[in-house]
Image 1 (tube, rainbow, N blue to C red):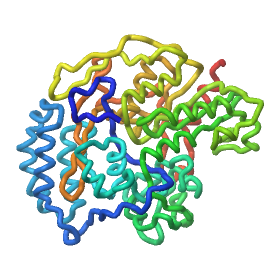
Image 2 (image 1 turned 90 degrees about the vertical axis):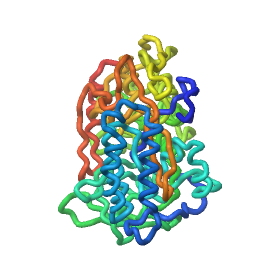
Image 3 (image 1 turned 180 degrees about the vertical axis):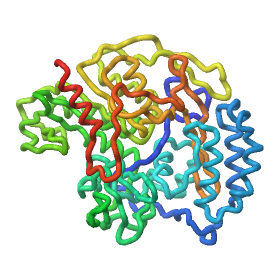
Image 4 (image 1 turned 180 degrees about the horizontal axis):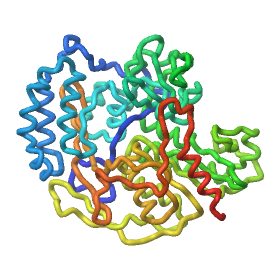
Length: 471
């Protein structure tokens, strides 16, 4: 992946990356990261909050691309007013929260401070990387890429409770039976947290206490804890997600793209679907909506008597951005010959405020009926892919609006090995910014989270729309 530290980078190679959460299961990464977690008690670590705060403020002043926005919020004066409250914070966690409150005043994505107790920290190191983090990478992950201990599930905190809002296909969490909407209460009897609850447990089996409804008694699941390398995990999960749903006499292929950092896994998943024979694979298995489902774990598992899929659903409800070039490759894999239509593309950074123009008005033919699934997790390069899909008339878009997080970010190491992510370039398509706006679906469908028991009404609606469409 190309980075945005050099303004001479060719326009097609700009990295568009934003992370919310990430997980997976690489197979050979050695021992888990040895660097300590950020402690809540300031007495347990020696982080210099003044040094941290001043470095954050100065880096934003020097590298944040939107100078006009810095002037509008009176950045230096606003930071000076917040500084005493950060320095008097009772914990590092509280100090980081106050710093992020300051950063949020810029109202721009790809601008945040992350700690090692967050999924984001490891995914950014893996997906964005860069020379500015090379020393940290060597010190914390020598001999391997960035990873953390986990089970392959993401959670969202709501009113102090932690609900599963993403499960990677093929992960230990999926194999153990964890479902979207489950509330995780504890891990081995201690309160749940995304990273620290699994620290020092790699290679062991953890006992999760979960609840599937608000009034139900807790259930217990045994789940393997593994070292999670984000880029490897997302690629493996994308390939493992390939399946066929039969409805109303039609065969609907489904692929979940978890990240836009490479397109090979999407191509491999498409190949599985093109070879799929549902009658020999399912054994009558059905999902929660009553659809007959086939899942393909290896390309060699497909028998003779092949049938083509009638429709394709691409699920972009992932959690990581990636590269615009990869977003284009996704669309290339969904057309016969022509490139996707992006419209005009303008990149705005601090050196070239006028930006540059690329792209040509071009609407490609599509190789069959399809639908795209989006939500608030769809961000950055994935949003640009969704924009191209909708702008080019590829098919219907189902779900809720995307994140509106379309900037380019760079990483900077702060005191205590915290990571500062700073937006260093903005983007316009057809003269409009997606930042703060996002892509609006053609059919708005919510997916409720708490105690959902794995239900996915967004996917159900997309399947119904496609299978009611003449082939």
